[in-house]
Length: 291
Image 1 (tube, rainbow, N blue to C red):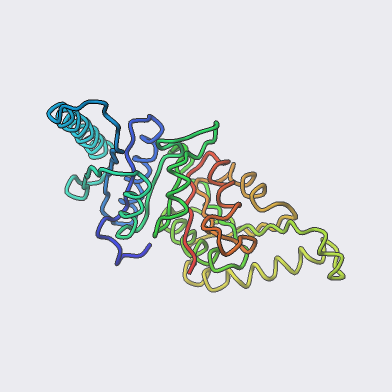
Image 2: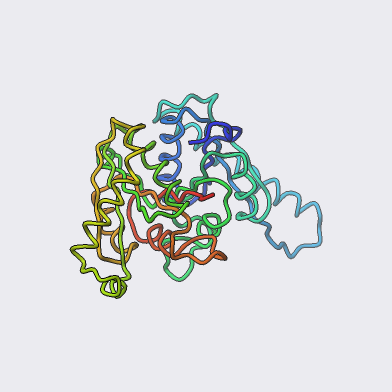
């Protein structure tokens, strides 16, 4: 993690939905693990009030603000009573405006932004809510999407997708750091889905697998020297990257992916692999930012 962005530390969007309780607990543990502050934020989106009386509109605003502050106070109390994070390391703020805009603004001074998988606005049965998806695209720091937080899985390895892009380099750095701090192993996965290209290169899958394994080892060598305590498992799949990552995630405690891989168009802020993984796994997913 980058310590010079610790003005807000780990920022977590606190919603009234139950699932975001998992996101908050995960964020608190992450802040404690890295020695960062924790900022709790609840965003109050504008509401249309069909009433001409300004006093009534002011009362409704005060009522909504009171409920928001109470939610944050209760959340802070729960965190201090269930984790080792001190109260003076926890800040709480209520923001007024469009949730995506306000969360994106906060991400400028954060080391990580944590959202629940269905923070306000989930539509069409998708597990990744519209706000969570938009924030994952626009945030200026890594974003963690938390579907659920099962502490019994904490001894399982960290899984990272590696494809050689700048985004995957950032993902690799984050994954090694997370694995080291957790005291767990690391699964480094490279998946190649362009099967039809292999014959054109004069190779069969066995030859490519050998070459890909060697290349993967080279990309990990420097990191392994920096993190000798992290045991690495290398996995090479002839499969769609998202499908392979979702399959391997069943045995992981955390998945780390880059925001854009080698197949993402330059105009896409969030690649299809990152989106599919964030929506399709049951463990927390960190989406890192490339250069």
